[in-house]
Amino acid sequence: MELQEKVNVPVFIGVDRDVFLRDVYPKRRPVVLRGVCLGPCLEKWTPHYLREKGGDMEVKVHVSSVPKMDFLHKNFNTTLQYNEFVKRASEKKHSDFFLCEDESYYLRSLGEDVRKEPADIRKQFPVLAEDFKIPEFFDPDQFFSSVFRISSCGLQLWTHYDVMDNLLAQVTGTKRVALYSPQDALHLYMSGDESEVLDIDSPDLEKFPEFVKAKRFECVLQPGDLLFIPALWFHNTLALEFGVGVNVFWRHLAAETYDKKDPYGNKDPVAATRALQACLERALHTLDELPPEYKDFYGRRMVQRIQKRTYMDSNDIKGHENGSNPG
Image (spheres, rainbow, N blue to C red):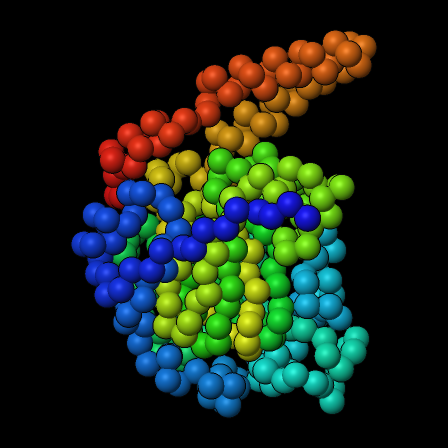
């Protein structure tokens, strides 16, 4: 099998807000930040402590008989008491289960009104939130959400992108993260904000031959690590151990850029949605009136015009990096 190019995500140690905004943020590339203070959660958040402090409230969780979560079906969704969920997620084999004794579990915290309100660990898990220090790498009024996550060992989430910048804080356990640049979107076989290539380690190259052209950036997060994931960068996570983490998202563009009805931070910006739904769909519908060879020819010309108008070459990117304003 043709090998995909891999690049290690760089590691910065002891980065403070000033260094982050000056040396890291403007480059718009993933970076692991090591040695940033996250609070007492690093010592406290054992499975026993999480069960004791999180209580017995019901939470919505994903359950899967296989460790790879499938975005097409989202596997099996159910509700469990939080302390029972932590017990099962931290086990290798289950005495109580839904599908099989080695099923995998995943929790992504949600807002009180899941359709309108973003997740905030301070609201959904206030006792645990006292142990976690949100990194102060952005202005408080830019804050969007803080998503509490727990996953079984071996659980892998599908490749997707978000439209906001975020910091993934790995509190306990280790996690492999594979990332792909927005410039490689055409090689990732997109369906909405997700890649159809569910197995990035052994992809079906007959079905996805372009996938090998996408450069893969990779890191293994240790407890206490922060991963800066710039908006539009695709990411795929694999829990190498039972793990707990918190994603912190913030609005790095003007507030009106974002969809007001987006509680997850993954809906495309309003202008992008308008362009995709109105202009592009209308143009493609018009091409349907032509015979196949004409449709193919003028479709390629459309792609060429879009490339000339919107694609950034390497010089454009360097100029953008040098002049970027972190807000």
